[in-house]
Image 1: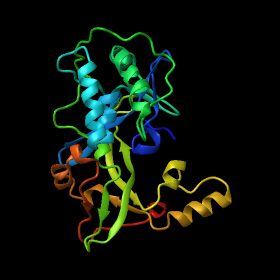
Image 2: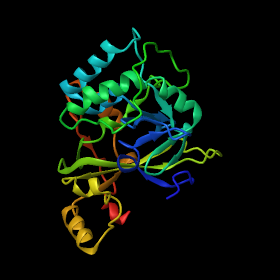
Image 3: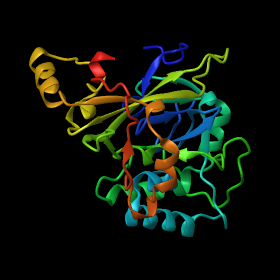
Image 4: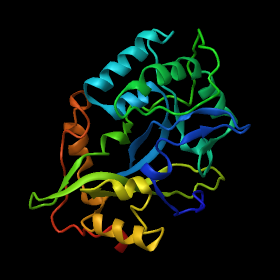
Length: 277
């Protein structure tokens, strides 16, 4: 799939999160640990990617997330550290890795010392830790500087807050928990990926198909397809416009653990199986 084609659909959990970030010269620059979304003219867009302990801590949530972020802040050479956020206009290609341009690679490379040390020695030891397999570690840097254009927008919210959230219909019946989010590309006239319009979320009582990459399309051998279809027959796709994300994000308390608040589908919303979209 050409992820840069206007209107192309992208499964965010499958295609972006936890994937290796690679520079134009093949540099390994960490993993995509979180994504930032923001509201523009009443629509939600995925605008930036984040990497490193601070981003992973936001996605982990709860006491463990607070602990990781506190260690990151204490060990960071800056008095008030700010994680690097790479706008998606700097993403040049998405395949098995997420490729970024030279300016993004430069900003990320300057954070790699402390980020990689914490990933290897702290995050990788946590249950469900989001550590990568980076071999290009290098020495721990002793000085940091701000990176204009590569800092989180004050109004942006981590998309990790949505993953794992319980979804209920208007009758208060559970539809499962969010295992995937889909977005489509904008046409901004450039060759870069650009911001993504958040379209829908997929909720399920099973994670197996999502982890195998079969959330949106049944693929693989016949036996595997039938097994996944059986396990995920109760999956539901809900359009973002049929959810009150404002209320969810306002009530969400990441310090108590992610997905502490339910997402409720509006009355008369069209809820379908992902394969029927």
